[in-house]
Image (cartoon, rainbow, N blue to C red; front, top):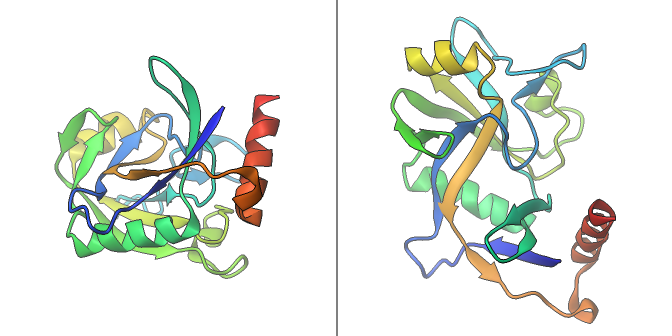
Length: 193
């Protein structure tokens, strides 16, 4: 099965993240917050402030994809995660949100954005999220009553999913793979076993 690294082409103005979608099944397989009882729910950072926190992109996480003809995995390197998170904010896209990648929604804004840099003292740890170093975390303010009442409070959405345009990096022969690439390839082989 092919492994495709998605990258940003700095010479292509169309590359980058256009929006963050709230979805029931995030491709990165991480929900907003896991509660202590291991019950997976959409949990808000602050009920009064209507703020949700979760991972937007996890570096080197294999993400399964299938189109009409083939099955494959995509992933984002740590460098691409950094670049994508910065370009997203520099482009002023923090107010762009969608529901299940289908419907543009108003009243949702990224109010915090950071990269996990410390395994112990990162803010995400306070809320029970144990994300790998280099993960792009976001907090979103939900001012949209319909989204809050009909989707967040009912558990119909559980995580974030990015929408954007990326270039494909050509797969390299095994002899040219870095240690991280070899580890990723081994993880994907285990998943397919």
